[in-house]
Image (cartoon, rainbow over all chains, first blue to last red; front, side, top):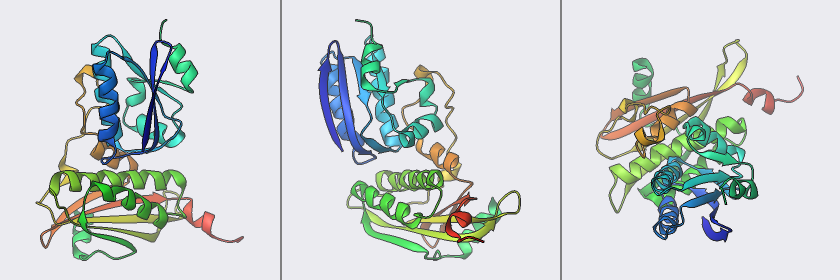
Length: 112
Length: 168
């Protein structure tokens, strides 16, 4: 799994490529926590390159979502593939996380 | 439920369809477990295959995270396909996956289902893995046999025979 972080305007875009499981989830937790601790709480998880996630990945997203919202921000998803969308849907995550078709629309969803 | 669980127990050791055996399983083996299940289900409907890959990953992640501390323990994953019929009586395939570990007795089917309709603040972080196992399979059984946890998953694939057969 690879993670890259880019600032776009007032939003932090964290791109995740590869597979999220019980081995790799800790790396993403660390990357997202680093952003939240630095005050970057308007977050977009760019998932175009995410081929797979288990519940370990969902735990990371949920934990980060709670932290970001507590600090007045949010975590929003962009570009999730069908296979990943299905796992999000099965676990009820699409009702608590905002999901967008691509990164530009997710970034634009945050007020300036 | 209990009938199928007895069935699983009576077939110990599990029938080896396509077997992956890991002597000292850890988190780094989960990718190989997923690849094994995906390869064994190459003919299956993609949604069935994805669901079973996820279910087995969740079960094995529980084993390596909770049952085995370092340096890990034995884990086997068997994938078998059996002829079956769907609700309409049409020919189908029933996939049966057996996951065996030598950890302390633990019945994953007894874990309470989390409420996925809860609002964000009321939701525990975690507890979702076994819920996903239930949602992606038709049957989910556990038995304790000869010092091993034997977990059996079943999933009916109505499309499998037609996708494999030639023109009738």
